[in-house]
Length: 234
Image (cartoon, rainbow, N blue to C red; front, top):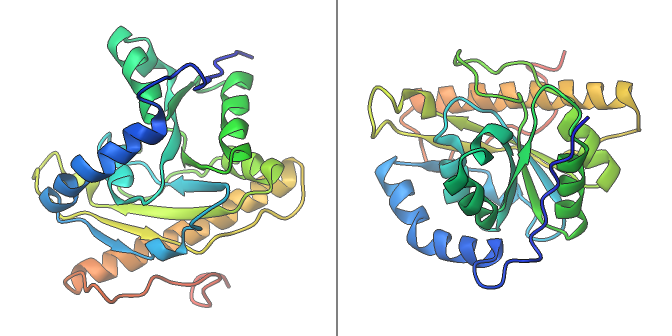
């Protein structure tokens, strides 16, 4: 076990909230325009209160795209290795990031995540635990379900589509699709694993929707699937 708890109380000027306020006005619009970002279902994210945003992860660009489409500040877990860099260690916390040691139980990171939700903020988690080499969704970890259940917060699955193509074409079109909020039922390892599987199934529906919408020319009025879907839940 390790301790990497992050606290944001010492920030006097560039608090994460102020940093996000500036970023959403100065940085987000160019990102959305440059990457031709299409957003579906963003109204499904609660406008207040704690939320766990559970996203897939294919590219380092994912965190920038996800931040660019949000309407509320986003606090998120980032791998400890990034914080080993002295510049990033000073910069990232101002963006709401906090470190997590992968492959072990990081009590400090869990405490930081609970603190975010206790304050009524949004916690972003790349639910596969690390970037995936393949385009398809990888194994969904149970950590997000555990954190959400313990905080009584809903999980909003979100699928990011197209960032894996940025290396081939910097202006590859990207889409972000939000699912409906989901509550974790029950407590304990079995309940958390079941919830993770359910989130994974929903993310695969959102993935199929994004791929179909892509082939159809990415219509603005396309409606992401509800949950459960009769086509894939049988």
